[in-house]
Length: 163
Image 1: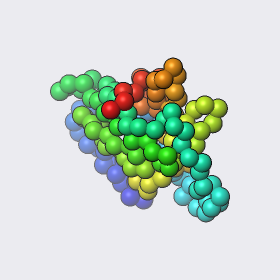
Image 2: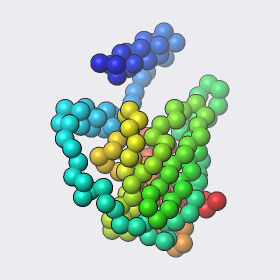
Image 3: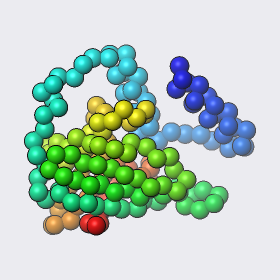
């Protein structure tokens, strides 16, 4: 019930501000749908799923990138992502301008077909834990990420810079 109240308050606020349109990205809609399903199902995970193999050496390090998301009346909204990757987990920290800070924290990493899938392991509302939030791949010694930004960049492979 609190989620509905928050969403209704946000809708009323945006309407009061004169904004005629309000839309969620495909990702946010999918996250909301999956959160509803996980609450309805409320099943325990298999403990075997928690055991993950070490992360491959080619991914280890600290990487960052800034992504512009949308134009606002006061400038371009953006998110800066910093991934710190160790042998055991990935830590994500974001800094934003006119965007919410969401899903920061620890991620479990599983490599499938030379792509590292990142699963959020925290308990922040609206952060999907059942499917990968981000994908990383190494190509010619460079690391690329998918799942960054908003609707315009979410499906793109964006080059990360090693720090």
